[in-house]
Length: 533
Image (tube, rainbow, N blue to C red):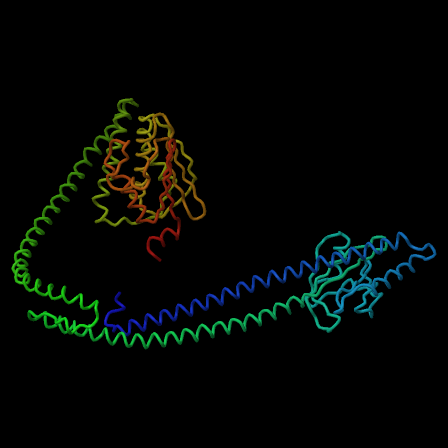
């Protein structure tokens, strides 16, 4: 609300009215835009409907001509030879077909491209026009002959001279063949009629929209003017009342004074007078007591703050030293276990000790990360994700075997990721640890690593009990009611790392199967999502 600072009530009211005016104009613009969109859709529908109708008419005309020729040929007078019959058929077609506007005439060519009949342009009858093209290079006759021979329903669209005006116009034509005489019989439609109808509608729409806009603008200006006059009058009354209150507060801040109810005319403000006078009286009574209390409270706050800071420093120091002290004996245990295995071979009890030690090491790493994360910069580097994941699975192999789990992997080779190794290890280790810990005995733990486009999908699948609340499991110290053991810190660490590095987390769980999916961005996408570039 900073934009309202130091502004008068009149200014605020006027700005509110201007905003309303802007919204009215935006609404008007939106209405006009929608009207044009509706018109465009209607125009497209009208154009297509007109074309479809004319196409059906062309199909009907051509089929009638073909049927007529077939009939004349079948029932021909034996006294007429075939050439005389052709001339009779052509003469009949030229006199019976066509439209009032000079369009819809029937043209006839033979398969080689020689013009046989064309009432609209008879000068080149007998000439071979196979290579004729329109102004856009469309080989009109070749395409029509091909359509007629193949008996296709396709139309040819091209630009052609209109008989009535001599001007060029867009035309659709169709042809069928009478194979006994090697003729193609065709006709077409000109599309300028539908464009003329649409242009007329567009002009009418434009006039209607202009009238509509002018009516809205006129009404808006009138209402704005009336509102402005009313605002000035009302603001004058309110300003006078506010000035009365302002002067009262100025005097009340320096001395014990009360406001006179007779100086206020507006009913709502009159109700405030009683509360204000009561408030001023109470404020002056407590003012003296507060001054005394402030002095003592400031001193106590300083003392308690100093004690609290000292306690927090000691607590942090204790945790750091405790974690550090755990590391040394833990490293000694792991080292001697490895030496023992190298010297005396595998041992079932030794394996269980090693699995337990590795679980402790994982917990240690979690605690170490929790302590350092706010004081340490975890820089990123390019990591061989495939090799790194395989090494962590190998680390947990003894733990999995100790819990009678078989680890099934489906890992794509040579996948790389721009990430911090420590944070990536925390994500993998916590999920591996939880998968082994909570999977049903003697079931498989499945791990997948796949890349799709610029994303790497890391999945951990286990046959385990259903997780009732898949969102709360990432909260610190949260555990499902049916789950026992653990600190509940692992997934909280995982969630913080994923949030920090823009890693998307998805959890699916039902009565049998639980799937944790982590979606990493690779390459430039990963770096830009973190740096904000």
